Image (cartoon, rainbow over all chains, first blue to last red; front, side, top):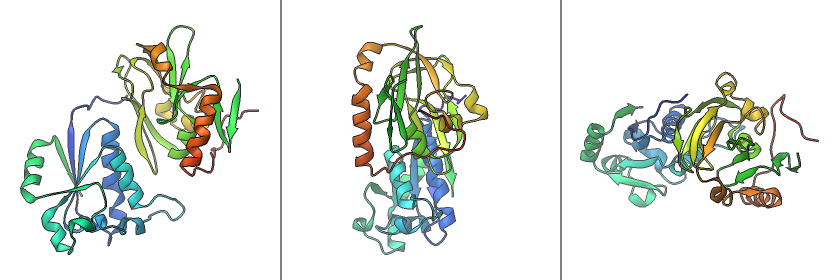
Length: 127
Length: 157
């Protein structure tokens, strides 16, 4: 039987990107699990995590070659589950990315925002 | 029980379906309803690893989760197709969540509910040939080739 987590909020921080494919799926999967449990969840990308949000990159990350699921599929499923995707504005510059380089559905926030979020959410998960 | 086989995906015609959410409702003689996932849903999820139901006594509005289900490639809610109170859960899923894969319409049911507004909400669901037509359209629209079943799944003649 599931506990009632309705109304709780979790912030998931992803710092790993396309150079480490095996570290990309799980944070997205956990975010989807939290959303399925009626938890409000935000997936925040910073450092290397930002590079998977460049258009065309996530499609190349496919851990199981026999599956039709790639990282872009996972990100889409997360957004369909009402997971909010956010990216650190400062990290875009690290990867020489412009807002128009991002996949659809991702909002850009600055560094002070993540401090606000971390203080206000019920739990923070770092990856 | 009359059924349709759409490229391996079984649709039982006497159930009421939320085609969008891939759930079914069966109206029981005692006024309760049984709710479960469809054959299409179990196929999309793949072999299910865990199913966690909400507890007995939980009130649910239509569209709110009655369970969360996870497989190796997917995790998501089972959205209630009707409003009401959960009055029974399938205890067998805790030990063997793949009951949903093998028997989505029988032993793999998810919860039983006491409905609040059944007549009105049943009208929003699809049944019989209309449900079959909707699933056929959905499968074509989603480029879904058909359903596969794990060993030991229910068979329909």
